Length: 332
Image (cartoon, rainbow, N blue to C red; front, side, top):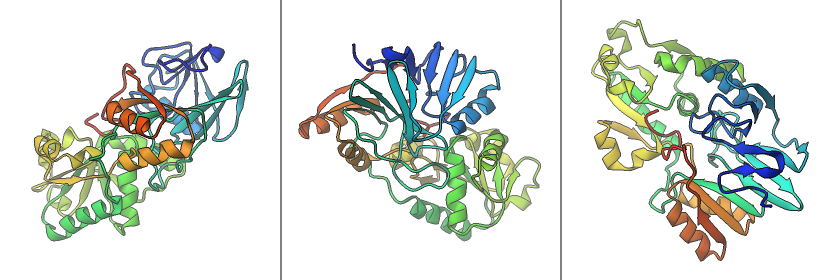
């Protein structure tokens, strides 16, 4: 019997990792909606992910929750499960499953760059690594996010009569962009679309300081000149954006490196800030794991599978249902 099947079912403990439909037992890697869904009978996740799920879906979104801290083995009948930080968003975890001397890691979504709004990624040695490949093409080489924030602040300084609206995914990306702005010296209030407020409050409650945040709704239009507003990508091109003076439409996403995507989205200032590994980081992570077998999912599988085989590793793509190829970098 395999330790884990290709749909991420673990027979020994009768549990699924990030199942796309309600299951009796689910192990959840992180709080993004294509990985964490309501309706499971029992959920095992990190304490931060449990808190995020309850805020997004309600206290009773699962039959019961069990939280598991990082690096604490949970010995179950048939297998041991341990979480290690994935660096993607707050609480995101890689899942290590051990049984009969075999070690399998399901990475979930992950990134290696420093980010004070998420626990730092840790490489985990294993025999089988099941990795995402959201940016699994050699063309994807992410720039330093602080350089992207410097471009934003330069634009704000050069156009003080205009608002800058930054489109961000509400969970993870918004808080990271705010933290990057603070690290770059922006001490002024940052204004939030209503969809951002509750999750930013949760991050603060969980110990991530974000500084002076204020609701954007209700502000005088003239008072918003020279200000930075964080909003969902859909809102920055909606009627909602008309309340701001001559807004500069920005969007923070790894996909902003694709110029056609930026143009199609009517983005004036694309900011290439990704919460996933780029091509080189994916390569490094696979080699760091020491795994002889790699399963690749959630994005551009074929190129990474080919690269793995060139390294004399066994590799194959997985077609998992329900995963968003944007990997939390898109419009949602």
